[in-house]
Image (cartoon, rainbow, N blue to C red; front, side):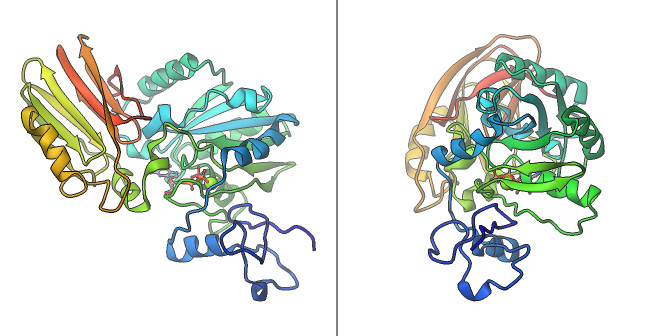
Length: 366
Ligand SMILES: Nc1nc2c(ncn2[C@@H]2O[C@H](COP(=O)(O)OP(=O)(O)OP(=O)(O)O)[C@@H](O)[C@H]2O)c(=O)[nH]1
Ligand SMILES: [Mg+2]
């Protein structure tokens, strides 16, 4: 039988093993078998039901290594809400130093007051610090179609007829971008590629003809420091913002603590009373308490009052990092994958996050 691929996730279609990618019941295979989708994609598209199934990093590197053998344009998509978690410094090496372009997606989640030039300046710095040398960097919202036409013009210009590979960490919106592009340019009416809020949706390359060349969706790299890879579907729904983030403001005295569910914590150790402006998902529960009660509260209330994580889920040992903030300008305390908290003044804080996602301080975005 000729090898068939699921148009939703790229898996090779098979009829033997329901627990493996690409499963389709034999009875569903027809003579034509055009645009076939596997059971997992069918359930995701129709019932938004997740069948957890992830590729291993070995699979990922095998799949992605194909790109290194070609002359291609590499488009790395990152998540503006989790820049550090979604940037992959080793991408040029993995793709044999083909031309690179970087797109920062999900800009619709940032408050409108964010100034794009400032954001781009900030991105350029992080990208350079990671020794990446893209031909260009763009801001985009794949769901809101923001900048899509301009970006498509630009990347087809850079590609000059070569294939275009859309790469990046899981869940940054690679497949959503391609669906948007197909709806704008190939008058496709519905989403062709499966997308979902759960990380690890695309499982293999999906090649789509585009002008004289192809645009190719790829699976996401599962990044150790990306919090989305550790959360259950239920927890992910809480930490992922659905719309423009409206900050929540807390006036704190020193010796007070903020909990972000049971996923992060900020202790205000020293400094004058100041505001902590929290840019996190609208569903995130932020709980204020006295520092002296914080340890006790966490041990009694994690998974109860402090959620996520929820009952029966893995709980995260939190690890603390101390920062002395002494800058005149406002600074952001970044809680990777969860958002950021803007502070000002000379203060000392201890910031706790899950051990693989390390918090850091940056110049305020806003
Ligand atoms: N707010 C917002 N959400 C987006 C945007 N683009 C994608 N998403 C959401 O991000 C989630 C992941 O999107 P996908 O397109 O499946 O991401 P992917 O990079 O293909 O993910 P994998 O295939 O798992 O590597 C989905 O819930 C999308 O709706 C965007 O521009 N803004
Ligand atoms: Mg995908």
